[in-house]
Image (cartoon, rainbow, N blue to C red; front, side, top):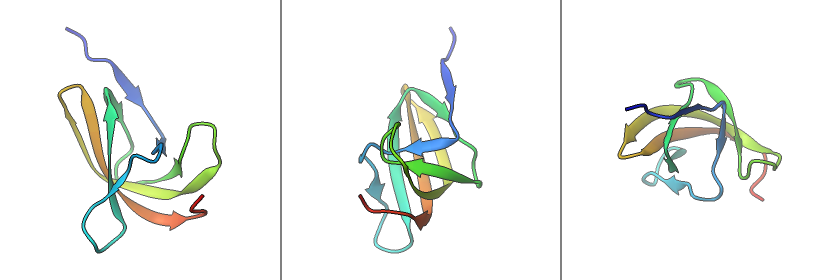
Length: 82
């Protein structure tokens, strides 16, 4: 049985991110399917696929299970809140 895998160099949140705790700039995002991101590298972050870049993120944890990907990322810089 094969496992479909998507490689991404951009985090697209679609507004579904959730803050992890109260301190630090850590967020979690759950995505359908299996997606591979570069870990511990600064990568572009967008709200929607066709929107402008909203910031820079660094993936600190990536988990695959039950046909979904869960990432924990640190927000390095924020360009715009809209």
